[in-house]
Amino acid sequence: MKKKLLLAVIGAMSVFTLAACSGNSNTEIATMKGAKLTVADFYEKAKTDQNSQEIVFDMILSEIFVGKYGDQVTDEAVEEEINTIFGDTFEEQLAASNLTRKDVESSIRERLAFEEGLKSHVELTDDDLKTAWEAFHPEVEAQLISVATEEEAAEVVDEANEDGADFGAIAEEKSIDPSSQEQGNVTFDSANTEIPEEVKAAAWDLADGEISDPIAVDSVYGTSYYVVKMVKNQDKGNDMSQFEDQIKEIATDTKLNDTEFTTKVIGEELTEANVKIKDDAFADILSGFITNDDAATENSEPVDTTEDSE
Image (cartoon, rainbow, N blue to C red):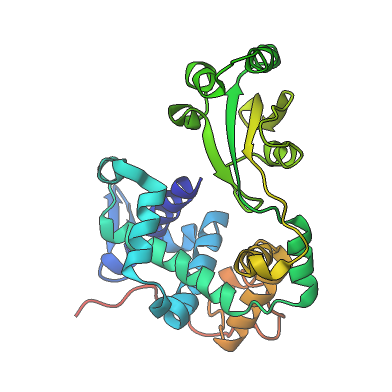
């Protein structure tokens, strides 16, 4: 999902860089009998498109957050994100998408700067930490098997519960989860996003060595079924201080995923940056983040989106 979003944003932004790369607003894009299409014509048409409205909003945020928080994003963090998103096929995907490494690095740096900006506004309360603690479960060691049908899952449960059964061997043979290559071995805590929530919830209730019943997991791809064997569970106890770093991280992530919080932060940053919309076509792009008075469009001559050629 991140990869698709990243490529879409980079591709869409090329629309608004066309004018800058074309000399001036009178540059001809195409000519025909009795007519011509200029950069200015293109801009006037493109700017009212909803996608263009979103792109301009994103560009404004990028200018603000990269300018203010970009120095907190290291080259190492950008490279790590590239590896996470694209894996070993990065160069092939670049070639197929007509992008450069610089394009991707720039887009990732913008997103990471945005995240740093959001984090800078996080102030955790005792209630935030308490809520995170209540939902927290420390890391466990388990094995899992994923199959396509409920019938297959029931067969796996029966086979795994037989005397002398080797759960890892069954996982290697029958599981469609990537963990099958490691005999189904996985480690996860409540903050893990790769293990389905239904699977985690079922796992917390298992004693060491116990095997779950089939667990149905619905997704956009349909319903799949999991069977979990608990290897080593652990109780979090009553001392939150043992897991202080994890609890703070969970509480922070909760804030970052809260639409009300992110909307408030964006509004504060837009206001501090004194953003003024100069083109009536984009008058409403900040609505929902700052008041109309703060975002008032300033009447001026039509915006020239390019620099005149010398």
